[in-house]
Length: 165
Image (cartoon, rainbow, N blue to C red; front, top):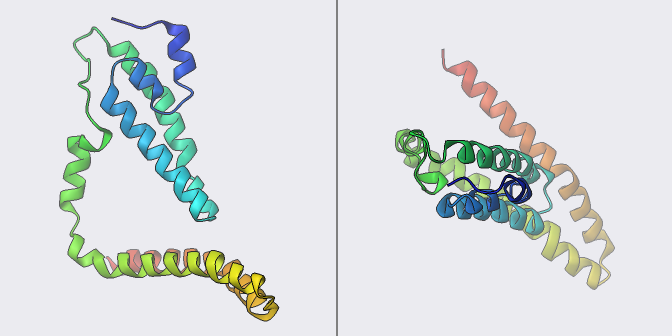
């Protein structure tokens, strides 16, 4: 049964709520969880790069609500699954060789951890104990760390693409 179009419109502005209103609880909860995790990550790590997926998730959720509403009661009606249970997505994950990616993932996690440590804990301790030399040094490092890491990743990916002929 199709739900009220006005309430569908209102709930579609909250990522996942429109899906839940249409009766797709697993799908709605998974979208809400993904959105909340990214917002939480942005709150902990002040890197603007993490905000890029938010409008994408919002737009996906908004339009997916109407897509689901139009399919209800037809032969194309979708079943309620978590968004990560899509078979195409699972096939992509299975094709990735995770063992080869462990070193790269480890380096990325170390850089993110060091950035968080420098930008929050050490910086605030240096300010609290009036050690301005250390706080200005940490300011300088954290100011240029993100552009250096992002440009390094771009260069590495570009070199890898050129190397695959």
